Amino acid sequence: MTPGVNVFVLPAKVVRVPPPTGGFNAEDRFQRGHYLEVQHYLEGLPPADLESNPARLSLYGRVLLARGDFEAAWHVLERARSLEKRTLKRAEIEWALAQGAILWNDFASAHDYAADAVRDGYGLVPGFVNFLAAMRDVDAYAGPAFGEEHGADFDVHRFNLIRIPVRVNDMDSAAVVDSGAVYTIVSESFARQTHIREIPNSQASGRGLHKQEFPVTFGVIEKLDFAGFSVRDVPVMLMPDEALMFETTRGPFPVPMVLGLHLLKEFTADIDYRARTIRFTREDFRVPKRATDQNLFFHAGRLFVRGSIDRNGFYQFLLDTGSEPTLLTSAGLQRASLPPSNKVSPKQVYGLGKTMVEWGRVGQVTLGIAGYGARFTDMVVKDDDAAFEDGIVGASMLDHFQARIDFVGMILTLERGR
Image (cartoon, rainbow, N blue to C red; front, side, top):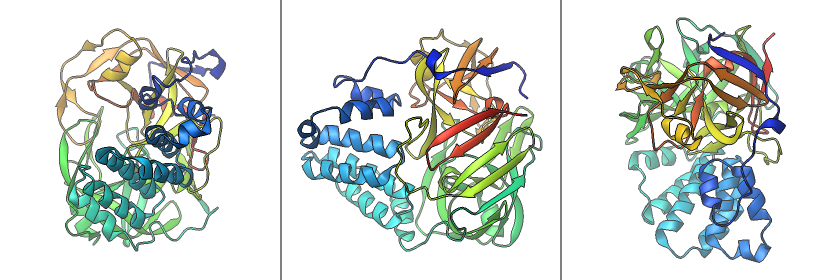
């Protein structure tokens, strides 16, 4: 267990909630991650006020997308698109539709919406649009049946991250389970060794926690075996070897592969950090999201968990099983009205890629998620004033629990490790 962290039960009733959402702050509250509150406000409007207003419909559709419910969002966003006369605003709606289709593995619709967004002026990288086009007729993640369940032991090696055996196109290796990565990622050299099919003209760029961009391309794994499952046609990002590097408290550690969110959403994952076991159950992600206690949401293809800071709600944290530390961003620090962090000497970033950044630290901060609080005597602050997230929940918090990441209900459940 991580030293300097005190974990305790934190009931939802003791967390101070923000005031109700109104028309003057609905968009801002959406950006803050108050999705359920914004949805409640919009659904309380007279139906004519919602149905005739493309801006409100667009916001409503994006809320439903954040909940992971593309079927409900599709009708709303299509209505918004038909009413919107401003070309660039229409392009934003089309890109939202593309993102929802990507979540549901409907790459044909995603490509069509993305192409429409580009025509209306939205700035998408051509290589990414080509990736969507190449996936039109691919049945991504085929193989396992709904309800199929398997488990595996994991090791943490020299770093406190979940590392499991994998087999890629009949070649054995290991991969980090990384909910903070949008797609499954492989190094370029590993892709060559395992004969992963690279998609032509799919050049794009990516970045890790360090904000430094690096070139990527897309490809497809013909067969991926992990934890007792055999999955066909897995979309992946190919990344330079020097970028696919985890920086840990014990130095840099290269990994050939990480299993990212777009794959993980096809399963419910039960993680026992103390026993070092992980169990996956194949689920149908494409179901309505109606849970009143939903605490997991999507934004820009990434997974966020709703939480509190010092018993004040609500804040959004990137749920990142591929990060050792749990940390705040400088933007989150400001939004929580906490005192500025004390700068320390430059260090290498934890996570994918290597670079030098300036860390900060704050003391005695309590984060609350899923009914538990964690009091940190010393918390790292990532310098990112423009961050969408208020912080990152990594292994230093999660390893105190048995964690269930349920993509059917979009709920993170924690239980104290036995």
